[in-house]
Amino acid sequence: MIDCNSMENNQLTALIFDLTKKIKRSKILDAPEDLLVYEYDTSIDRALPDIVILPTTVEEVSHAVTVAAQYDIPVIPRGSGTGFAGGALPVKGGILIVLTAMNKIREIDAENRLAIVEPGVINLHLHEALEPYNLIYAPDPSSQRICTIGGNVGTNSGGPHTLAYGSTVNHILGMEVVLPGGRIVWLGGRQLDTPGMDLRGVFVGSEGTLGIVTAICVSLIPVNETVRTMLAIFDSIDAASSAVSAVIRSGVIPMAMEMMDQETIKVVEPRVRAGYPIDAGAVLLIEVEGLSEVVEHNSAVVVKACNELGAREVRIAESSLERESLWEGRKSAIGALGQTAPAIYLLDGVVPRTKLPEILNKVLLASHKAGFKCANMFHAGDGNLHPTVLFDPLESGATDRVLELGGEIMKLCVDAGGSITGEHGIGLEKRSYMEWVFTESDLAAMEKIRFSFDPVGNFNPCKILPTGHGCAQGHMQITDQQFSIPGVYV
Ligand SMILES: Cc1cc2nc3c(=O)[nH]c(=O)nc-3n(C[C@H](O)[C@H](O)[C@H](O)COP(=O)(O)OP(=O)(O)OC[C@H]3O[C@@H](n4cnc5c(N)ncnc54)[C@H](O)[C@@H]3O)c2cc1C
Image 1 (cartoon, helix red, strand yellow):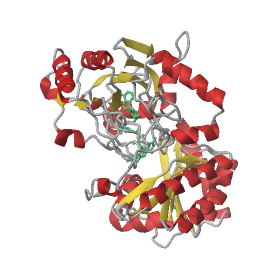
Image 2 (cartoon, helix red, strand yellow; image 1 turned 180 degrees about the horizontal axis):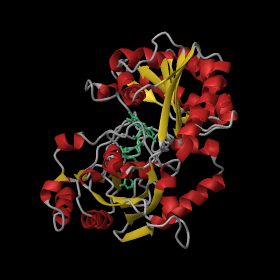
Image 3 (tube, protein in one colour; image 1 turned 45 degrees about the vertical axis):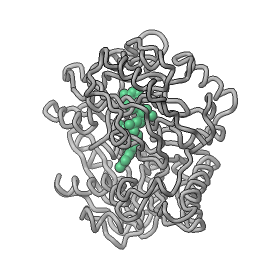
Image 4 (cartoon, protein in one colour; image 1 turned 90 degrees about the horizontal axis):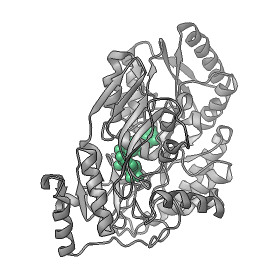
C-alpha cells in the first residue's frame, strides 16, 4: 500500500510562492477540484498530486524541477494520461508537470526526414502535419488521436505498425530533457547515430523516472506507394491466431496484423459500423505496403495463408473510405468496450506468436473461472496481447479479483516465454511482476542507472522498479467509493 503525501498548507503556500518566481500563477493549479482531474490515468489506480503545473517553456519545466528539489518533493511528468500502467500517477504526491501545453511542431525538415516537436504534440497532429510532405512518423498507437509524443517516448509506445517499423525508440533521433536538479541537456541529436553512450536509448521507455522530455527530434519515413488493407474473417479465434504465424512463416511481414475476437466485434460493429461480420469468431486486419508489384505479390501470399487456415473470407478494402472504416473499428475498440461495462481492465502482455492460440484459450478460461467477460483486440503480429476484462468495481471484491486475474494472465505470458509488457510500460501496475522476468542483479543494475540520473529518487517514484524508498509493492489501495463517479473511470 502506498500513501499519498499531502503537503502542509504553509509548505504549499511557500512552494507556490517560489514557483511563481518564474511561472505564471495561472499555470499552477492547486484547487482541489482542479487536482481531481489529474488523479487518474487509464489504469486501475488513483492518486492526487499536491500541485499541477502546465508549463509552456523548457525554462519553466527546469524551474519547477529545481524548486521541487529544494523542497525534496516528487516530480511526475504527464502527457494526456492515456497510459494503462499508472505511470503518470503521483503516488507520493508532489508536483505533476503536465506537458500538454508544450504542443508546437517546431520544425519539419523534409529533406533530412526529421521533425522537432514539443512533448505535448498529439501523435495524430504530427501525422496530419506531415501529409503535405508525403512523410510519416511511423509509431501510431491506437490512442494516437489523444496521446502525446512525450508520453509515447516515456512508454516507448508501439502500435499497429510496430510489426514492420518497430516501436518509438526506433524513430527518436534525439531529445532535450530536464534532468532531476533542473539541468537542461540534449541526448542524441539529428543524426541516426551519435558518439558516446546511447543515453537517448536509455531514456526512451524510462516512464518519467530519469527526467522530463521537453523537445523531441523524430525521424520520418516516406509514405509507401501502395497500401492494401484486408479483413480476414475466421470462425474461431484459434484459426485466426494460427493464421498469424502462417502469414509470417510465408515470408511476408505485413505492416500491421491486428486481431479482434468475437466479444470485441459484437461491441464494436453496432457502434462503429466498420464492416466486421457480427457472427465471426475473430477477424484479422492485415495491411501490406510498398511498390504496387510487391503489394500485389504480398497480398496474394497473405490471402493464400489465411485461406489455408480456414478463413471464411478475405475481404480487400476497395476504397480509402473502406480502409478508413476498417481501421476506425480497430482504433475505437477500447472506447467501445468502455461503453459496455462500468469499467474495463486492459492488460498488456507478450507471447511468442506461435503460442497465441494456446495462451488466448488459457486467458479466456481464466477469465471465465474468475467470473468475468474478457474481450481481446491486439497487435497479433507482435504477439502483443491486450486481454480486456469487463467488470463492475461497485460489486464487492470485484476489483481485487480483476487484479488477481491480471496477475494470472501476466504469469501465463511469462511462462509461455513472453513478457509482462509489449508497449504500455511497467508503471505502478507491474512493478511487482518485474521479478518474474529479471534477476536480482538485473534489477540492481537498472536501479544503478536510475540513481545515476536521480540520486534522490524523487523522479516519478514507485514506478518501474519493484523497490524504492517508501514504495510498497503493487497497487494503491482502492475503495469502492473511488469508483462512484459514473463515466469517469473507463
Ligand atoms: C484507447 C487507447 C488505445 C491505446 N493504444 C495503444 C497502442 O496501440 N500502443 C501503445 O503503446 N499504447 C497504447 N495506449 C496507451 C497510451 O496511449 C500510451 O502509453 C501513450 O504513449 C501514453 O501517452 P500519454 O501522452 O497519454 O502519456 P501519459 O499517460 O500521460 O504518461 C505515460 C508515461 O510517460 C511519462 N511521460 C509523459 N510525458 C513525459 C515527458 N514529457 N517526459 C518524460 N516522461 C513522460 C509519464 O510519467 C508516464 O510514466 C492506448 C491507450 C488508450 C486509452
